[in-house]
Amino acid sequence: MNRMIYLKNVTTLRLQEEKCSGCGVCLTVCPHDVLIPNNGKVRVQNYDACMECGACSRNCPTGAITVKSGVGCAAAVINAALGRKKDSCCCVIEEKDSAADSKNIGKTCC
Image (cartoon, rainbow, N blue to C red):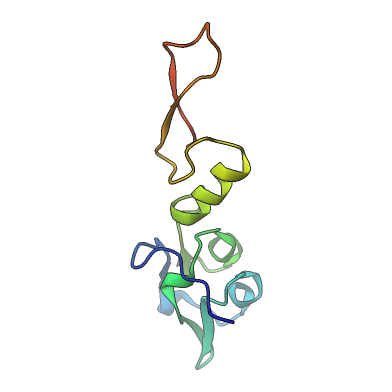
């Protein structure tokens, strides 16, 4: 099976290898095997496979990994799951459904 690729060169994932303790928690929680073991630490194997769920950064005990969760493809998946009409990104602006609020416009997330 081919590896999942989301959007090329857009992920917010960052790894500071000097902070990495090599605990491997990120390897366990990453749903797409973005990270791999590397000489007692980890390294990013495939940035483009990252869906920016944030599991790695939330579980990293040393703060070696950062990612802005809820942006990019992850936001598109969440918006679609919530039934939003526009699911392409977090910055989509939709009109409210209520006729009484027809002039009000709200941001769909964030």
